[in-house]
Length: 137
Image 1 (cartoon, rainbow, N blue to C red):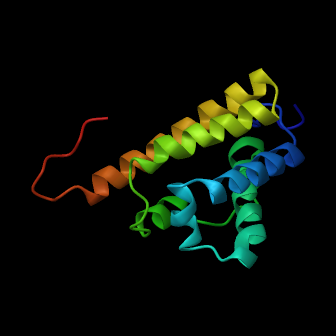
Image 2: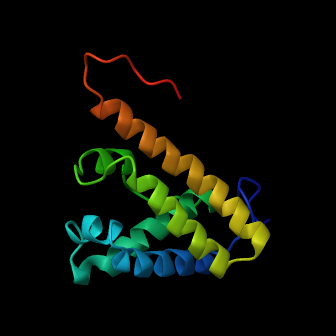
């Protein structure tokens, strides 16, 4: 690997390809498509995909081109529900398996599941009524 901090061997182009294929499927998904459509206009998709590809390049390749607060965005979007993350991850896994080698798909999937489950858990905790005890991991 050219960067010793890099999590696994993947090119920026492969990341962009995964993101592009994923969001093409998202737009067709019966549950997730409307959630995204409520916030991303047709002409905004290229910029959104580039931002998310930058997120993944930052997470995997340790590039510093991503500027955003994804947990805040997810929390501030009431249409996003905890159960959406299982659907999101399932669809992401399908794209990874269709696009990358098995080892690379598995490594990328493990990272996506860690991040996605963290977002789901954060949303569950923050939106949980104050009079209820916190959920245990």
